[in-house]
Length: 166
Image (cartoon, rainbow, N blue to C red; front, side, top):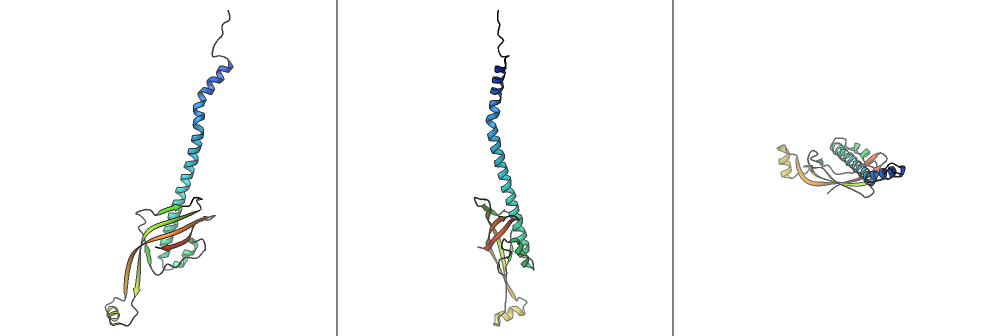
């Protein structure tokens, strides 16, 4: 009598292992793609944080008495002239709107800011003389504007290409 044992030869062992490993192999490409997506998302978050830090540094420096030190924040090495206005923003409030280009090497930042300009009375009219005598030698004007910054990424990180008040 020849009795054949089923499931104990080498071929059946390999078949069983292949069947058991098939579901794991199906998920491997998805896991690799998910890993790439998370790396891209992490890189985007790091870029956003770097841009926000650059913006905070710019706002701190542009309002300082020696605002000429802003040049190192710009790709061209020169800070733009934004007038004699003090620029303030609610940095603890709403985050700026950042739009990245498709290549990830440039971006546009938009933030609501408040500009304050002080105009000194220099004329000799009667009203200006009266204002100066009463201790009001200037007029302060506050206006809500939008800070629009174009940024580029180089080997040193993110730098401003241009900054405008809209």
